[in-house]
Image (cartoon, one colour):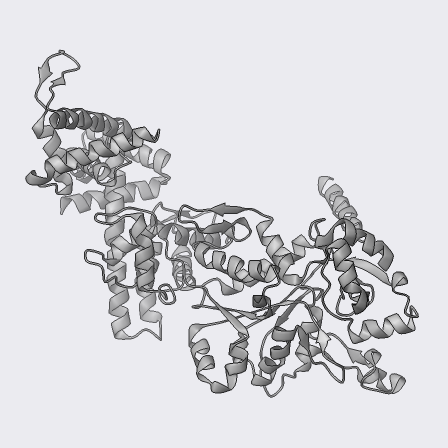
Length: 632
């Protein structure tokens, strides 16, 4: 049986991860591969970049490590990796800060931490991410801590390996009692991080302050052995099993940190600044770990307003994690969540999720002070589209107007909940954009925290999302009706270019059929230009600007077609669509179409299914809906 063979292969792979040897054996490994002795921040940084980095057009880095699960957060993640992990990997002072992810609910904070934890579990199982620890140490001690402080500088000068930290109380006792101080014989083993086994990964979640004890973080006395060892300061009478102990060498997640009692927060002061924490009746214990916490903006504001928290504030690096502000990326979020469900029997119509995403993003955007800029234009610009009067170079200025943009609005969880409610309706075979908008609207009535003013505002955004869908629907059906649309568009584009070139250069145009030389066709040029509001006194400037753009593209070896120039693309599409508008309206709205009309309708439905991803149900519904729109 094939799967049994796969199980056996997995067992052998697990066996290969086991390694034990002496400290002398470990030194040989470290000298060959110094990265083995990395500190926790450097290990996480190397883990993230090892999966690849893509530089986007705006200079933002996209990390493949996050790209499969998080969408639209490239800027925030770039800042997180570069400003925190990269700097901390270089041992800059930022590594002495607690990383606090601050943002709205369902914005991706917990997902970021989860990805880092799962990534560490995978990475430490690879040759590049191998981690070794003193065998029997409850804190998975770095074996190089065995080196006497007096020899560490010499070791670094000879091998280029930096050693930081001291042995924990348990290892100090073990070195003395079991090995008689002979560090070369100390046993070392390879470890693989595991949240389930509490190796290198810890999670602390605050609960009732009255019942939760600081020992959850730092470990506790083992009273069953106290009579045997006779002292609370004997390491053998202490359980080094707190989250800070178990997360050593790796990462500890502090869930909703600012909800915790202050006694827990103060315990992080020395950990963040000195890399040490206090446990029981022992001296400060060294710990090499990344502490990541997360909270929402309201709790953070309350935290910084309390003067008692000033010492901890200076030891926290706040990293804002806003909502995604790109429609196309928001669609990927919904697609990911829907893929996790068992919905093979329900089809989701094209543009349905995009319409939901349009609504979501509109609620998160803030009005711009720039003249001529509204939320819809801003939404399109953020998603990579050029709009009239603005280009992609304007995006940075728009972002600078509201640095906190994306920290409020409708969260993906609400939208996916409403989509789920629509998907489970009885007898539903296909869910379209109107079904989703209806579910979003109905959900507002059931939401207890929405004020009347908020409800009206959200209803306006639903209406705007529908208007955007109407334009998409009309355009898609019109494209399906236009035979060989791309070919028709290019032909019209080429004809337009021939005539504007002749017009600007004061030449004549040769008829391709008769060979006759004719004056540039002003009617042809104007019927295209009028589609986008080019006035009579603006036509020469518009035509000359097109020729300049063509020349510029040619010099750079680039091809200029009708999609290259946004306004020209819009003009040509509108001209083609105008020519078939009446045909669509009459053909699709006729209750008893003649054979020719029926053939045309069936052809359009086939194209909607084959070329645009519709099923038979949503293709027919789209055709009827668009016909009604064009009849208005």
